[in-house]
Length: 333
Image (cartoon, rainbow, N blue to C red; front, side, top):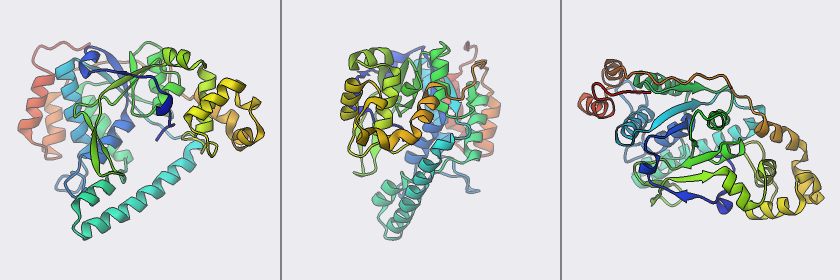
């Protein structure tokens, strides 16, 4: 879910074409969750093969990745989460409970024949298993797309790679990469131009956007450490925040007091037990700094075997996508 910063974000709306030829590092887990949420049948049931294996995540990953390569020359590095920090366990349990509630509501809607409501509720039930993540990594490897396994939070690893110059920007729907120090964040790297809102049961138009961290912080008049304190007040994946404090009020408090230690007791005390641990997690997260990025050749026969022979994708569609993204003689970095 990440931290809510939208009301104070300064963004630049871009076109996908503005990223042509760029190298970006993508939050793989976040991408797969989006595919699992939205690529579904009319009643909300995910796509699957005849043996019952879910294939929504693979369909989204394959067709979007090949289109971004074919049409925009985008170079993507995918980063996947490792074990979550202990501070995140409570948030994970809360998300699990929410998914279980939506699963019950989606099942009830299907039983009543209300496909629209079933779809809307189902978008909130996505579960990314270890096997699904493994399938995604295997597919990316067959495509010749680099995969990095993070020791913990994938967005921290993405920020590390972008900060080291291995990529121009991190790509994620959430803002956490900015807290971890990514110089730039690209959100809504989409080809559909729309996003589904489960609470309203409708789609809204969206466009890609980029946030330049240094320029944004300068505009706010705060630094990176103060941004972390602001996020802690609002609430992160590692704490609930302080009741009644949103991004604008948190920004005002940080500007006035400098840090949480200088804030009034009713603001300071609710977050004191986890303050130093969360700061340390954002400032010095577990990351792999010695990562070799290698763009390989696409194993076209391997992709066809993986998607078509084993998971019943349309051979004609898969081969056409491969032909567009990896024409004979094409050079990869």
